[in-house]
Length: 151
Image 1 (spheres, rainbow, N blue to C red):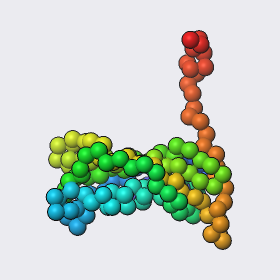
Image 2 (cartoon, rainbow, N blue to C red):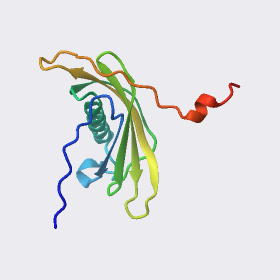
Image 3 (tube, one colour):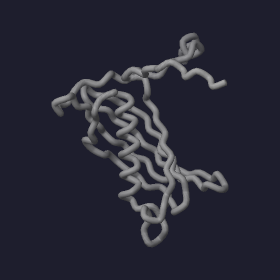
Image 4 (cartoon, one colour):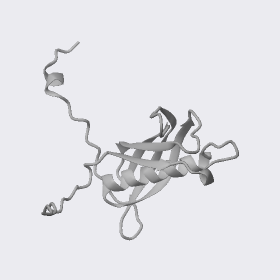
């Protein structure tokens, strides 16, 4: 017997603040040293930021700028890259997305931060004009934090 499909669900704007993507590093993405081209890393990070911002705003979004990007360790051909995004700030029409790119050895599971950067994306309306995004809600605090005595 086949189980019945679950009912359709909707995740409203402003609820998803984190997204993860996993990609494999193939030879055409690497330089003559066998490591991921910096431009390829930036493209993957921009793609992840785009997906994170789109899911957060539930709007068409475009990249307005990339802020500081730091390359920590080379990512080698054959490694996985896991991109973790977080919406860290919102403006009236913009979202700042922090992206961490981790390099992971597929066979051993060893994992290391490869690159970290921030991207600013702007939400657009149907006419291509900047439009509002939901304000970022502060992280929920636990009951213990509310009842702890002040230092």
